[in-house]
Image 1 (cartoon, rainbow, N blue to C red):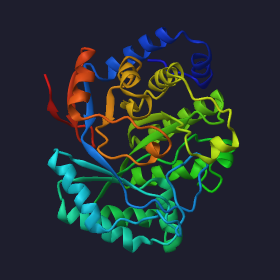
Image 2 (cartoon, rainbow, N blue to C red):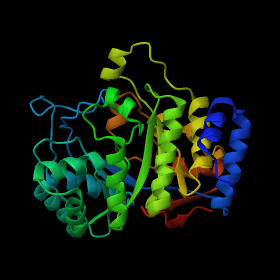
Image 3 (cartoon, one colour):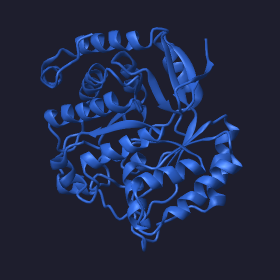
Image 4 (cartoon, rainbow, N blue to C red):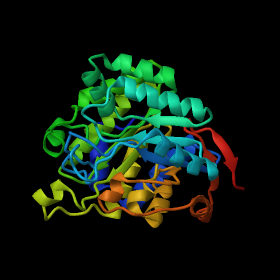
Length: 349
C-alpha cells in the first residue's frame, strides 16, 4: 500500500468528503484488524499530584505548591484507589501528575516499587515525557537513567501525554515551559530502545494549523519507523473551560465533531505503522466516540474510572464497562477487554 505523503494528508484534511474519509479509514482499519474486534481497557487514571510548575495555558488541573488545594497523594491513598480498581476487574493504572518541582528519582522509585510489590499483576503505565525529563533534571541524572531505574522497579510503559502539537511555534505559545518537540520524540525513542513501549497523543484545537497537525503525524510515523515502540495513537480536542488560554483568546471556537472525525480518519491513514487508534469518547461524548469506530478507531480507550485533567477543563463524560460493550456491539463489532499491551483478555460475543 502506497504511503500518504504530507501533501496528500493536508489535502485530505482540507478538502476530502467526510463520508469518503470514513470509508477510506475503515478500509485501512479492517486491513489491520480483520476480525472486527474493538477493544478497551479497565483502568484508573491516578494523578499522584496536581502540583506543577509548567503552567500550561491549556490546563485547568495544575496548582502551585502553596495553593490551598494542592496535593501529593500518600501511598495509602493510592492503594485505596487501586483496591477500588481491582474490585471491578481493572488491570492497569495510568499514572501521571503535574511536574512537581521537588520530587526526585528516589521518591518515584519508592512509589513504583511499592505498587509493583503490593500489586504485582497490575500494569503501571505512567509518567509523561516531561515528567521524566524533569525527574532527570532535578535528580541530576540522565533521562536514560531515570527510565532504567523506573523500569527496574516495575514501570511497564509510558503514556504519550505532553505531546499536544509537536510544533515548537505552537508549544512556545500554549506551553512555553514545556520540552520541545524533538525532546518529546527523543524521550520516547530512549524508552523504546529500553523496551519500554509507549503511546502517542495529540491535542488539537488551540492555535495550530493543518500543516502543524500533519507535521505532528509525520514525527510520530518517523519514530515508529525507527523503533516500532508506539502501541497506539490517541487524539483529543482542547477542552477550554477554566483555562488561561481561553482567557487570553475568549473567542476561540470549540472544534466540531466533524473536525474530530476528519482528523481521526487522516491519522488512521497516515499512521500506517501504528497498530491501534483510540476513540476519545471522554472528550467527544459517547455518540461521537462510537462514530469514531467508523472513522478509523479500533479501540475505545478506557473505562476511565477516574479522570481529573480534562474534567477540570469541562469534559465530564463517564461510562461503565457495560456501556462500552453496548456501544461496540451496537455497530456490529465485537467488544473485548484488553490489557495495556493490547492483548485480548475477554471477548463479549
